[in-house]
Length: 264
Image 1 (cartoon, helix red, strand yellow):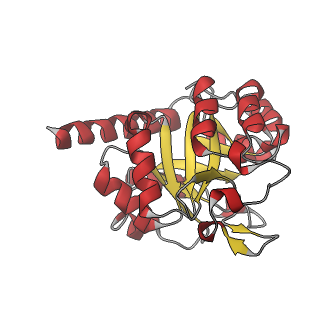
Image 2 (cartoon, one colour):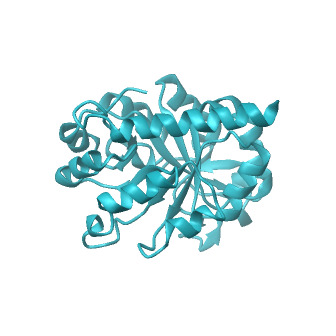
């Protein structure tokens, strides 16, 4: 029974992605993800940034998760605390100095999820330096939104996504990758994420690697599409026209002006 429910939930999610992508380009628009929680209105990944995202047009927030030595899940971009040249995973939560003037006690994942949920935002979690215990906690504490597609578990680490799929087959997942020469067809034979997330903002012209053919191949493989963090209005519009389901951005005002995002 559990397997049939999981398959039905995954098929429903994929149909939603395809409907957004192949519909009338003036009606089916992507959801804007506030990159790093909406950094334009506050410190990246901060509660203040997350709480401002909806007002600036976001339908979801992308936030980064790292796990400390004592198992606390923190919302912060980097896994290495640069000032101390130490990995967060080697330090207990109470030993971590402030980041951007914000104490670590105000960067707890539970608080960030609560802030996003209060505004009915999709939570896109980028799982970075995280151990199995951290993943288990996320799957346990937020099982309902994960199964409902309101929390998307994303990572560059295929083993993390494979573990998530093993534990919760109905989970909505996303694979982030940086190499434009990665063959998504070969990826599909090993990792079966709901979405693929090309992180191509390091390229001079990322849209040279993402065109109609790229989108057609992704859809044929049943992948939804999440974009790199894009702040140029013209490129945001192009990603929308290509049929991306989610567009990450640090500049919500510009992205909102470029498209008419759907409410989720």
